[in-house]
Amino acid sequence: MRVVFFGTPEFALPSLQILLQPQSPFEVVGLVCQPDRPQGRGQKVLPPPTKVLAQAHGIPVWQPVRLRRDPQVLAALEALAADVFVVVAYGQILPLTVLQMPKLGCVNVHGSLLPAYRGAAPIQWAIANGETETGVTTMLMDDGMDTGAILLQAKLPIGPEQTSLELAPQLAQLGAELLVETLLKLEKGELTPIPQDGSRATTPLCSKNKTFTSTGSALPRHCTIKFAPFPPTVSPV
Image 1: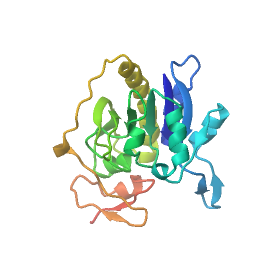
Image 2: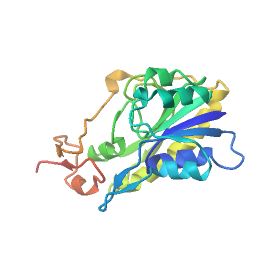
Image 3: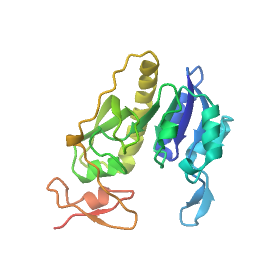
């Protein structure tokens, strides 16, 4: 199966790694990730971790600032004739022209049990709201924000003192394993996409430049300590 991988941060690494394993039935023919950006206290320009891994395997990498406005990258993706596009924390919304390119569609790995916690920071928001369980979802993408039909889901408990820094790697690995199962079953026609129940959807709003206050009774007072990294939250006392 020819795969183009869209993903940028550490959360995407396990999914890319599992597709690149020896004897894998998948052929990763390209990576699309965000541009290199300044990071850390020294603001040194560094490549995304997915780019480092892809280049180590000789995989072509594209880093468009705005994918939908980059005709050269769009043409290159079309020419790859991929069977599926896999999207894990890429950081841009895919335009409809891209969603329609691969034969099997675009499969996204999302860090929540959709339709709960659509959008950004689903892991942090699950902790902030005092959830005791979360998970990962693979979905067949459409042109909405995490609104595509659900393919498979896997659940994971949240410990009472667990932070997002601890939970994210577990969900990333769980998502990688679920991705492989999803792709193999999708290729064999063994999956029936299930439309999301929009009435149960939650989409918290985030901004790196604001501090958020939650008035929900589920938010524990010590959540400001656990709620790392971004976005921060404050609970009134």
